[in-house]
Length: 485
Image 1 (cartoon, rainbow, N blue to C red):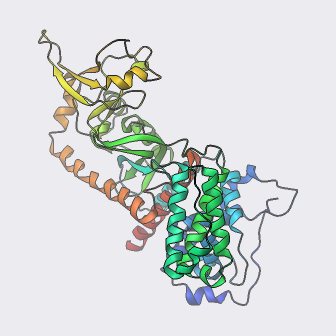
Image 2: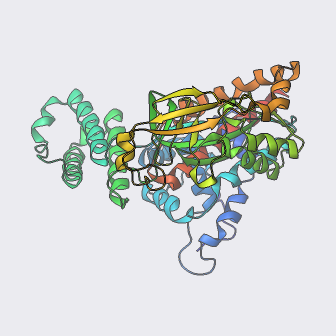
Image 3: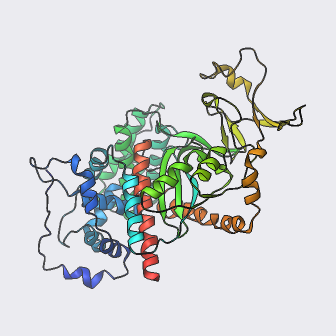
């Protein structure tokens, strides 16, 4: 049951918060700045309002998720730190002597209470509202880009991933107590995931009996992380890895397995919209959604800055029709030619090649000039015909017996004359220089907030990670801008 008005018990020790938590502490500033009641309103339909035991307040559970993202902790380590860290308890609306949740409660909250919720738009909209309220969001320009996040398994099977984490745990244990090796069970003789999980569980059971060893911070942190990995994998129906992760390309010789987050960021470096997808999705198709979501969140857009991935014909038409500027340099091969919608191949601007609907990257290209000089030349892309022969999507795409498989597109520079002229103006060049800001934001997400790799499996988990990460980075930026006023 959801308690309508959870009360904070009186405590003789509440003054400790004012004495020990400085005014410039980030958690204190975020708690004082944000009214988190919107979380309860958003999740109300996930709780029973009149029967059952009182549930842990959804606002507090959401704050646990934020703390996990801010400090990159496992559930168990997060709960342990919340026991003694007064800044955590203050942020969680707990009195100093209050008890904390069990780590399993946080797992259930993620899987049950957040299911079917568009947490990303809710959280981004809230931060944009705050930025506008405090007048730190004044521009009408957004910078768009996509950043990639590696799958939790990153081209590994679930079995290999468990082996990696188990090995890391054993290595730390050997450093502190070499003799512990004699107590560990024999390694499994097969490559079965079930056997590897059983072996890792047995390792954990041995370490749980070593009272002095398991209390060492380095050991304790590894134990908690391995436990979380084992529990998560046992919950997953697909033991073969991350079922929603897909291969994407950052260059012709570099691919990744995972997800993309398509981001719109204001000139003040506040994210105004974001969309999480699997890794193979093309950047160019999300410009319209990012613009419209930004405006739905209260941020009026008149200029969009992006790389060449966004200079497609459809995007240019959309921006012109809505009287907005697109600061994106033309790429002569960014459009899909005259192919029917169902036969389109995707252009990957990082690899500078086309990707077929099955996800295969072209391996070379050549220019095909037309005999009729009034027609634009074409670029012909060549694919590995051996892959085409066994491709499940070959019907209607590959002709049986053909020795080559190509895809041709027209270089339609004539359709982009106005944009071509615009990109030579001083205004275009000045605005284009601001694109570096989103590269810095992507780096911040990855290196300061763990966004380089997914911390769970599946698109649902990635969306939660993306939503909480972006909320935290936006709040840090908003608080900094408010303090600088």
